[in-house]
Structure formats: C-alpha cells, structure tokens
Length: 53
Image (cartoon, rainbow, N blue to C red; front, side, top):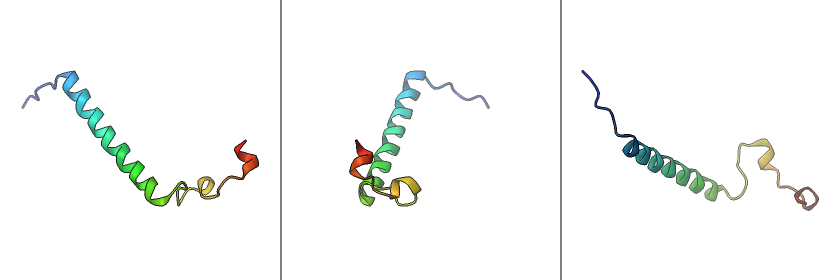
C-alpha cells in the first residue's frame, strides 16, 4: 500500500495549527499556576529585586 504524499503547504499548515494548540495549552497551564513553574527548582524561587536588575 502506497501512501499519498501530503502537499507540503497543507502539511505545514497542519503542523502550525498543532504547534499553536500545544503552545496555547502550555500557556493555560502556566496561567493556572501563576508565574512560577511548580516542579522546576529554579523557577520555584521568586527572584529578588537585585537579581532582576
């Protein structure tokens, strides 16, 4: 059985939509947890004002 080749621009569009969906989901998760990622050792600690400069 031979697969029909997908036209590149159609495939690119599908990939772009998929990536956009994944990014949106990740941003939603981040928004739920606030600015800090819960299981990330560095991101868990809020930075001080002196570190932010």
